[in-house]
Length: 537
Image (cartoon, rainbow, N blue to C red; front, side, top):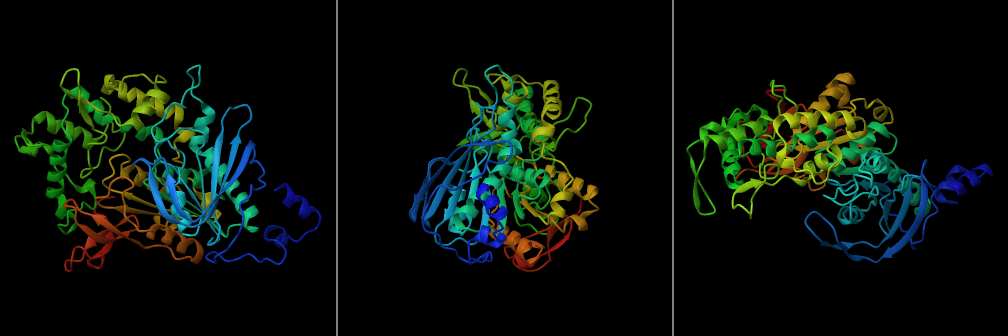
C-alpha cells in the first residue's frame, strides 16, 4: 500500500500502479496464471500491527486438512497455490490473529472468496479454502486469534474477566481485517485487484456474513450467509433450554424415543402443504400434540419402551421453547420435525447407571464462560428461573458486541451489495424462526419485502438440518449471477432428503413464498411444485 501511494504521488497512472504497465484489468472468470510464491508487501489495517508475513508454495495434488468437525480429511486434485499467512495484533491487546490467503497459481478466476467459521472457530482450517481454490477463487480466512470449534479457553483473562479484545475479534473485527488484508495480498500477487469479492459461511460463518453487511458494507460485493447465528446472545442461551426442561422434569428420553415423537409429528402434518412427501414445508403450521404418543411402545436398541406422559411433556416444552414463569415467550423452540438428540442429548452416568443430560458444548460454553464467567459451572443445576436470568444477562452484556441483529442494511444496499441466505426448517441448533424474524425486521425498517428483495433474499429448505443443504454450488452460482449480471434469484435449485431418506429435487422459493404441490406430477421432481404464499407469516 505504501508503495502504491508513493507511485501515485509521483504521477503514475492508477491503472499502471494497480495492474502493472500494459496489463489491463481482466474480467472475472478469465484464468490468470502467476508463477512464484513470495511474501506480499502488506500494510497493516487501521489499528493493527503486522507481526509476520509468510508464503509457502503448494504443488498441485492432495491437501491434508488436520482439523474439521469430522476429524482430519484429505482433499484431492487441488491446483497449485500459494499460501500467504499474515499475522496481525492490536497493540496493547495481546492478540495474534492469522489471515490466510490461498492464491491459485494457474487458474484464478479473478474473484476473492473469504470463508467463515463454525461454532467457536472463526475461520476455516483448509477444507473450504481448498474447495474455493478448486473452483478458481483466491480464498481467504481468519482464525481471529481464538480457539477451535468447541474451545472456549480464550474467553477469560487470567483475572477471570472476559477477554474483550478476542471477543471483538471473534464478533466482527477480524473478519473485516481479513477482507482488507486479502485484497492487498491479491493485488500484490496478481498485480491487479480482484474483480469481485464474496463472503461465504454457515452458522458462525453465516453470522460473520451478516456482521459484514451490517458493519462493513463495502467489504464484499456478495455475501452468502447460511443458517446465520445472528441474535447470538439470545439463541445461545435459548438452545440450553432442552437440558433445563429435562433436568427439572428428571426425565431423559433417549435419542430413539425423541425420534418417535419427531416421526409421529412429521407423519401427522406431512400433507398440510398439499402433498405427502416426507417434508414439512412450515413446521409452525404443525399443531401435533406429543401427548398423542403416550402409551405407545417403541423399540429402542432391541428393548420395548413405553412413551410416558413425562416424556411427552418434555417434548412439548422443547418444541414450545423457553418461557418465563408468566408465560412470556423468550425465543423459538426446536422446530417440529427437527432431530432433538443434539440439544436434548443424554448419556448414562457411569457412577449411578442412570440417564442424565449431555449438554451441547456450544451453548454450554457460552453460558459457563461468557455469561457466568465460571468455566467449571455445572449447567445441569440451572432452573427455569435461573435460565431467564441468564437469558436477560446475556442480552444485556453482549447484544451490542455480538448480537449481529441490526436491521439497518441501508449502507450495504447503497454500496450495491447482495445478501443471499438459505436455512433448513429442521435446524435444531439455530431455529429458522429467528432468521425469519430478523428478515421481517429488515422489511419493516427498509420499506417492505419487495424493496428488501432487491438486495437480500432468504430461502427456507424444508426438512433440512443445520447447514445440511445439498445445493451443489447452486447457491454461490446464484449469488455471482445476481452480483455480476443482475439476475436476482427467484428460486434456488437443491436436493432435499425426506423423513424416509429419499432424495427429491426442489426449487426453494424466495421468502415469503413457499413451495406448493401443483396437484399432479412426481413429488420427487421440482417441476411438480410452484411458489405460493405461505399459509402463515
